[in-house]
Amino acid sequence: MSALAALRAAGMRVLALTSPSTRTTARRVADAGTEGFVSTADAEDDFVAAAAIVLSGGTITTPSAHAIIHVSSAGTRLSEQEARVLALYANGLTISQAADAMGIRHDTARKYLNRVRDKFTSAGRPARSKLQLAQIAWADGYAEPHREKDPA
View 1 (cartoon, rainbow, N blue to C red):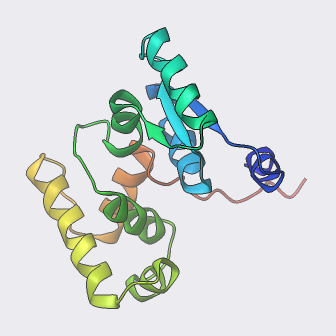
View 2: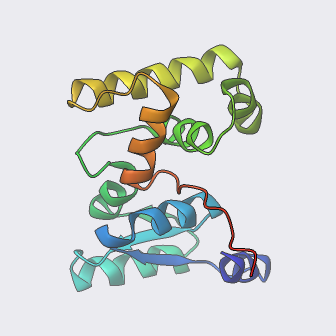
């Protein structure tokens, strides 16, 4: 992500190419900010058109790239805000801390999280506890599990 930050700091416009196998990285790149996203599944003409849009000052995310970034591997569609609160919560923040990080009210963050729980539960993936939500977030690439660093 530091390379992306350096490009953006230099005033460069960024068009990212993503695939389903890079869902977690794609979400991190989206959070860091780009002007466009295309998928490896998109046709060459779609890529060229997206590049032209980004070069002319616009922004674009192709439908297939959007699906990679915003749809879980089980097909559950989350809004951008739902995905963000899930990632923050799964990474150990409380609902209040997630709300503060997002610049929203505590009750709004709770509503987003309840919607996420309902969507996953409706899809046959029980998500009532924080641990269950975190496991789904890790499996679907919304967040990465924290691992202790080896003190070598």
